[in-house]
Image 1: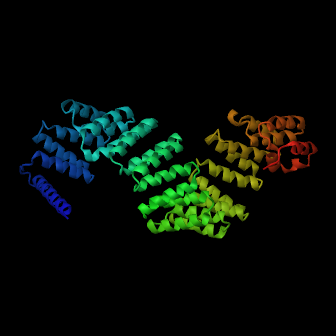
Image 2: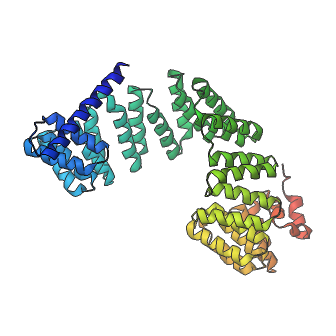
Length: 472
């Protein structure tokens, strides 16, 4: 109540300053303002987005207090706000020569250097502001420094800074989430588990601590333990919907789709329904074989956001399951139109075109996908299968020849090469390839039979199956 009274008093005082200033402009009569009042007035207009008014007050104030360094700082900040960084930075550096311990100057410089992607300079000034500034803002400054390190890929340094932030204030939720992001970006989920286990041991009532532990466990495939961690987070804060959604994701990975659906339904009691949640629910129904119900959820998603590409993909998959090729094509094409850089959508659309015998059209889709991701092995394999289904075995071999060196020994690449060689009558070469690969992949015959069923009738192939290890 006391804080509300102070806020009301501040608002009344500010309104009085504004009225006095506006009256002065209208009457053209001189009115006295002290420096603090004019600085408050500039800040007031800036917060309202009235930059021209703020500049007018600054000009008036500078005439009254030409030696004021704080007004010069406001002028530099206004320059920066209008995009004039070229002049703002020299002005700020000049002010810094007079006031080297002014944390606001350091903070403004840090922000501008960050915008210019001069991250090392930004880090320097953020650190100066951290050492000189108000204790209340230290948590935010640690985050700023960590983000600059992330921007230049110095993940270890970012982790160090975030740990400093957490040692100073274990309740710094942003630092916890950024720490999880850093471990994920470094691909060190096991280290993340150790770090967050240590954190929750010391701070067992930290909801974000348990949540980030759950995320690290889930990335390592330890879904049951991840669910336990999310449940601890929800015991601490029953309205923390991110933990509920991640629990649903873990349940989905465990193929417990009914329980995942319950989590998604519960999440919508906490937050407004969202297109992505309805889409995830549709995917659960789809995997349960309830195609009609899945489509209902995808349509709910599109009612909220008609351009939500994943919902169109879901409808395309459902249409494909019903062998409604026209409907499937329509939705996959729409998804690709919405997200033309998404290679997964290219693969889905190419698959339908291939399935209905539109091999040339499918080939164009795969070619575009390879322009987007030249190293994507799945696209090469799909494109190769498309050519082989169209009896274009030489072209398939040419395409296989362009597969990146790191993937040429992949079992499916060997199988696709065998199919082309065998179909072209080059059986000795095909079997020599197969025999050479069997040492590396003893169960390769089973893989080959799966993608090339006709080969099972070949006596020479049958001999190799007899001598191959039994499939577990």
